[in-house]
Image 1 (cartoon, rainbow, N blue to C red):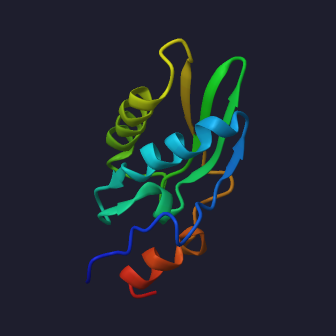
Image 2 (image 1 turned 180 degrees about the vertical axis):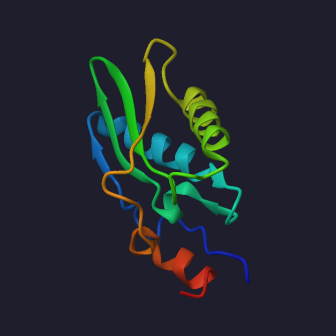
Length: 119
């Protein structure tokens, strides 16, 4: 396989964002730094992020894994928390929720990720 194109400007993230628009870019870039170690691609490009909501109660990230049996779920969630902790105000609580509804499908992947995986 080749090197994936990781150009955030060329392809906007395919997840829903609700809340403070001033936090959209730093949150998105932080999430792009988290790599799914099984495929060596950003979790944003793999399509694991479903929604980010920023409100008076904090930041809520709704995400999935490629399978319910993913052996690196804890690693990815910890990486998400660490990267977001670096860009979020300290007083803003963070919650990462894993869901499998709807289940992940390859169609959620960015075009560059699909090319990288030769799909």
